[in-house]
Length: 401
Image (cartoon, rainbow, N blue to C red; front, top):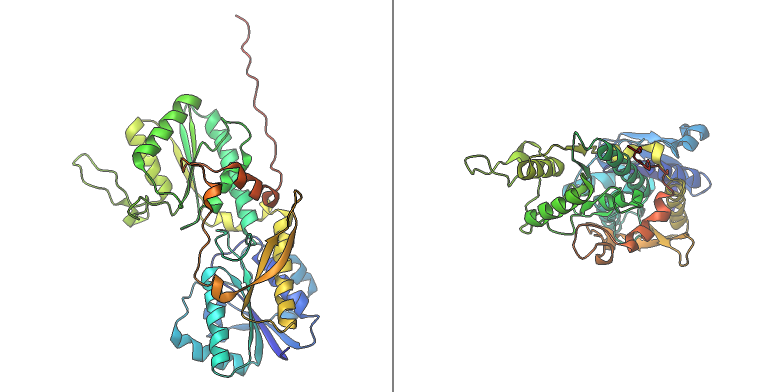
């Protein structure tokens, strides 16, 4: 194992547990004699190139322990797309601070960043060990059963759709439908989680729209009408990245005005939920509401499942263990154990297999109609989100006349 300083960075959107992975790296690195200093990048690789570097050993054990329950990205994040011209300056800073161990916590683009930095240093003769730690609420990272942060965000979505659905059910004399939009540009893992509070057929949601299946307006309106006639109200969950068959996002309006002109509301920031609301209102002339919570799904720490907190921390620990064993160029992976009871072990996936790739939901998790999930998906997600609260419905027996 190389002797020198280690540095940790966080990139992309935050999660409830990304700081848990940070705590895992700090805690395990402190036990390693070959790691002399433990540094942090302020605002990711972008801050690193400005030499915005902090000493994490000076934070104290109490702060490191509390990181495990603290949401968002404590180090600060960025969304810088690494370019070839960045690599030489990055190597110079690594040399300047004698950094021999690089850890980045993030998603697809983050894994590409560490892969390219580690590869460039190897090609140019600078010894550096680089390991990626998975993170994304989208759950679309290749090479791992699931990503830390996804279970917490999934639980957030499940509870939001369940609670918002109960509200819509009881307010159906005012608003007859509700639409919840989840993040996820090209994968439906998160919006699909909306199903987890559903126990009976009439429970929310009634329709789930995932980016893995193209949107068909006529079919959607037909499905909506069927649900509306059946339940008297409709709960819809939609992924932000759902598109028409030609690749056009549904957030780019196809609704026409009274002069038959297409309204391009998306150019002004219209959401998929807003456009669905408009489509339904125009066709059926009924009221409804939509909910677009954006990054709240990424930082609702009050809904953090214990398994997510545990696994995020352990991923940080495992990253340091890879370094100790002389491993480089890998991302830590979570591998689900076999058997009825949920268990997980930790492995590794080459960064070159993860970088810039995406993992959409498998077909077995989406129903043949493309508007809901299967039992297989529920079984996959249930141990990650944990038990949801049980709510009651009145028997509503009429008084005898």
